[in-house]
Amino acid sequence: MKTYHSIQYLRAVAAIAVAVYHAFQWLDGGFEVGRAGVDIFFVISGFIMWSITAGRPAEPLRFLWRRFTRVAPTYWLITLVMAGVAIAWPAFLPNVRAGWSHVLLSMAFITHFGPNGLPFPVLPAGWTLNYEAEFYLLFAAALLLKEGPRLAVVTAGLTAIAVLGVLDPPLYTLGANAMMLEFAAGLWLAKLVRDKALPGAGVGGAIAAVGLVVFALTNREFFGDTLLRPLTWGLPALMLVGGGLALEAGGRMPRWPWLKALGDASYSIYLCHALASAVVAHTLGSGQPMLFIPAAVAASIAAGLACRRWVERPLLALLRGRHDPDEASTPSIAHI
Image 1: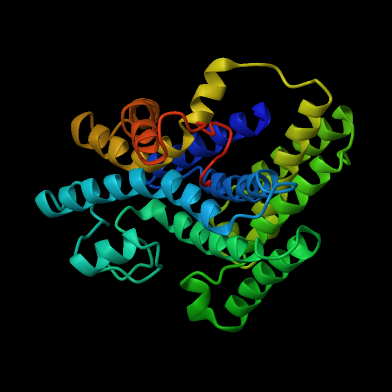
Image 2: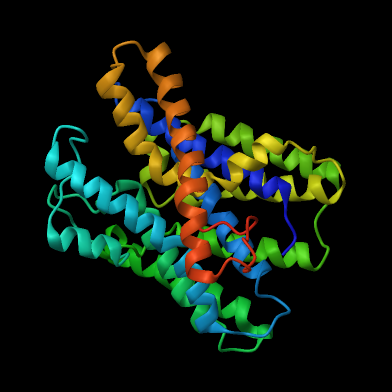
């Protein structure tokens, strides 16, 4: 599949934004809009899933195997590390608790209430992977259909999940979330790209700029936990991704190898940042925000790059074979 540099850059931005947000949680909070990195990942995930399957023979089992090998092994390993740390040093991450059922349900990508009473897996950021798993299963089932109606069917399925959550609040908490609509937005964006229907670079740049302004104006916790999130953060995420793709299609996207490398490592950064920030908090301390936040983010990036090189890629090569394409341009979360 073609490498979209704009997608890689936004993956890096999204992962680092989430890492910054969680670093601020060691203080009194702040940078709430950093959570919108997840919304960017969801739009990107929808975009990539359509891009890698459209115009190709439908192979649902192969699709699921490739998603599994991309997402699960590294996530499982980090989850087990997190569980071990939680047992050996409970104060290391105060909100993380471990138990056999909690660990197993977490590794099965099943949203549930953990020992701390919260609907998050052992690795708290892994809640997004549960949503990804829902999307992958639905999309794999749709691959049994002809490509013509596939997009409409997946969109209808994602909409039904969102509506179900609105009608039944407990289900909303456990995965029937309106954020599922962001995957659908990414799917339709991919169709526009495939149909060469994107606006020109000038319009695309303006759309991306408006998306950034909306993010800046919605830097409040209120917008992150309501049914409005697909609008307040999902829509600007779509604008940012779509605008970036339009800029790239118009030849206006610069080549920054360092940012692309961070995009390649974005999944590992996402998985490792909580542990990395905790290490900084327990060694350097979090009493000086101007020192702690940059150190925590730098540690998160360093840990992610190391995990990408020595864990994520070797595991992928082991499971798929060393001659299998690396799919560096194919994000898992968002990929998220």
